[in-house]
Image 1 (cartoon, rainbow, N blue to C red):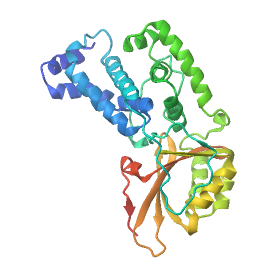
Image 2: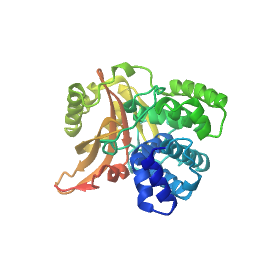
Image 3: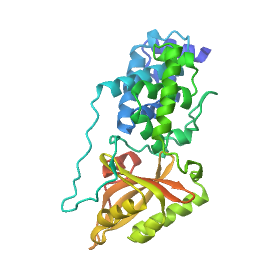
Image 4: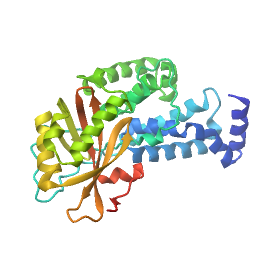
Length: 337
């Protein structure tokens, strides 16, 4: 523990709230990302982060400096998230709520319906350090596909995999964080890796376009143009053969160009509905807020939010959320004419 950190800890233990804020502020954003990976929800992650900081403030006398302050905070955050996942009854899927419109028969019903997108603006300028044993790049480990796959794993396996393969903590450090043996940590990691391989999409992952690249921007611009003009045929042409569309908090999932195209035709573009899209980024991926244009003009109302997976051969994934996520991206519920 450095001299500066030691002085701040001593001041914080004496009740100096400003000293405590100086101690934890450098770690706040990465802890929120950690909680998001474990819980799949920005709102739940923020709740877990606040719980973590309160627990750290109240328990600072128990910090003995045998590990770094960062490791100690991760221990608290991980266990807060484990408690949240174990105790909370998972939110039920939202029922279809568009009157007079019957959605096409889904390909399947998804398991993860509590997922929320994570704004890239919360990652801007933030360093997310990883140890030498990390196996995943930070951009990959915040993607919607990765975070979704984590939610399917048992909670303890999720914690071990994130701490070991995403953050690069040593097995002995993880065992100490979870009050477990190194053997049990290694066993949980082996099972988690196998489960993640089964859940993550395998086909085409090597063809994902680099974030922010010219090729990504060009494909996304074509998609937005077709979407705003209501050209379903052009949209379908931009989809990969194995495209998947999900729509948390609804459990409906559509696989393949034909199924997704039918959903666009029957639901999204029904009765000549026309949209304006406002671009942003979420989970390191291109994203859009959707606003419906009224035939008579006037205010445009929010209709949802979606995040794209883009490959060299087209759009391979569309995750659609309801308009309730817009405030997290600083976007209004309506736009003027």
